[in-house]
Structures are given as C-alpha cells and as structure tokens.
Length: 277
Ligand code: AMP
Image (cartoon, rainbow, N blue to C red; front, side, top):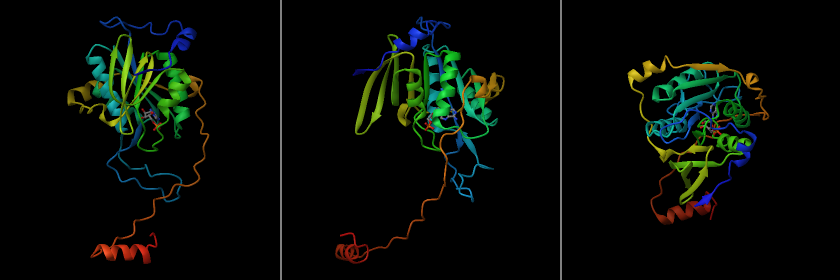
C-alpha cells in the first residue's frame, strides 16, 4: 500500500472545504461525475471527407462508456449512504443535455452543462472542472479513465494536478473508509492498491462495475431533475484549443492474407516474399 499526496495544501487555502450536508457516517460527500458525449461505441467511425476530423453529423451519440461506469459507482456509493448528492457535468454542445439526462436517469441528482460549440481539449476540460470543483466543493470526483473518441486518458490526471488532489486512476474497485478512499488500480500484469485522502479524483476502468440500465420510471423522473447551463467564460476559464489537428486519416486497408500448405512453405515465403527472415 502506498499513501498518496495529502490534500492539506488544498484544505489550507480553502478552509470551508467539505462543509456540506452530512450523511449518516458524519461525512459530507458530494460526488461530481464528468460525463462526455461521444460517438456511440457501436458506430463504425468514419473520417470526414476533408480529413479535418471524424463524422458526427447524423451519427448516434451516447455517454462515454467509462463515464457510465463512473456514474454507476457514484450511485452505488450513494446507495451505501457514503455519498449524499451526485452532480453530473458535461462540457459539450446543447445536445450534451441528453448525456446528463442519461446520468440522472441512472441516479444522479442534477446536471451542469458547460456549453461549448468547439471541441475542448483535456486541459481545457480539466480547467473547467477545477472551476466547478471550486464552486461545488465535492468530496470526490469520479470520472472515466478515457473518452473513447480521442483516447486521451489525460483529463482526470490533469484535474488532480490542477487541484493538488490525490488521484486513483484505472480503478477496478473502490472503498470509502475512515475518511479516505482505497482504490484498486489495474496495472500491467496485476493490481495495485492505493489509499488516498479525500477529496480525491478517481478514474474508472472497465472492471469497476457493470452499469445499470435506466428504468422507464427513472428516465421520466430524470426529465424533471435540474440542469444548470453555463459557459467556460462564466467560470473564468479560457478553453480555447492549444493544439492544431493537421489531418485525420483512416488506417490503411488491410491486405488480404494467404494460406500456406506447410511450415516449409511459410518459411520460404517469409524469406523470399516478405523478406523478414
Ligand atoms: P480523456 O482524457 O479525454 O480521455 O477523458 C477522460 C475522462 O474525462 C472522460 O472519461 C470523462 O469522464 C472526462 N471528460 C473528458 N472530456 C469531457 C467533456 N467534454 N465533458 C465531460 N467530461 C469529460
């Protein structure tokens, strides 16, 4: 076990941190869950004809699958009496409201849409989330380990760094106990368990849980839950991009394979045709 960076620095500049409603255990625990609207994972992604990005017009969009896992984990913590409120937040176009409604149908209490027209890079999202953390003062941020559209795997780490909070990334199990959080992390060839002080950032890996389907009554209830809309400027954040995408291209089509009749034929082809041995 290893003890991560303490959040004393954060608390020292923010003495009121954590002064929210208390649950039965006496700990105030609001959970913030950032959820991204991405091209649905079942859709065959196509590159736009002009090579500037991927086609999203008329394409089915859904909540990033790792974010569904994050919402599920937050809901389970609330069901256990560890969390008192779950706030889902999305940085995206007006349609990202649907993503927030999905999160609320799963059990989140309210939503925040930070409306942008252009894509915001992980650093921009992390800065927006930092501003929201300062407003909302959650005890925990649970988010996806990566968004399946750009595969950045960066926002959670950047947010933790900006806040000076401990981070437990690639979580396959979490337990909130004794005022801290124990996170089992998926690492190459095994698992690592870290104990973090709260507040902290946790990013969800695939094995953390299996997200629930929202029931019809909960989908109906979610329509009445509040969504607050704001812009990065309202939060004092400049979310303009720092990277320029030069070109997006499809991977080269796979060449057809050949069947060989014997090991000798294989070795000979590798020598004379593929010239790799
Ligand atoms: P990434 O670093 O882009 O791979 O994303 C990692 C995680 O950050 C995602 O799983 C989300 O939880 C969160 N995130 C990234 N972009 C957004 C966004 N535009 N709105 C809300 N959450 C986001």
